[in-house]
Image 1 (spheres, one colour):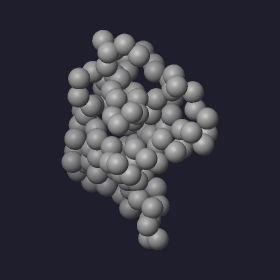
Image 2 (cartoon, one colour):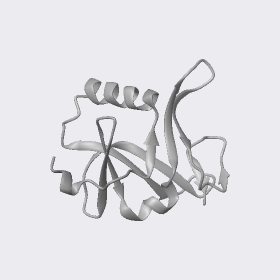
Image 3 (cartoon, one colour):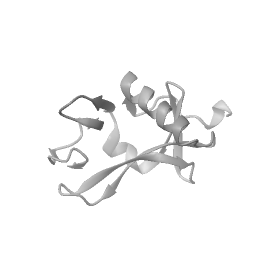
Amino acid sequence: MSTDTLSPTAPVTLTAGAIKELKKLKEQQEIADDFGLRVGVEGGGCAGMNYILGFDQKKEGDSEYEIGGIRIFMNKAHGLYLAGMEIDFKSGLDARGFTFNNPNAEKTCGCGTSFSA
């Protein structure tokens, strides 16, 4: 991976718990090294927009970042909605899964994956 394709600072952060879980998932699902974690948004959901989080290949128009050994792909237009967002992984009795702490969200939904900005 050449450093000239990497953008300097990722607009999102991953907690240590999220990095650990993502590396575990990538290994368990035998995901190839040319795949990275796609972070983005799409229209829909109960509050207007849903988060996108999943392994994917880099597409035209993507920015690429590296956080804790995880390649991150993000459509450049999505940075406006995701700047400053923290992605965490919870594994407690009351909740299990990835969580999104987005300072740009004006309204969120109880599902935790839908927001409006």
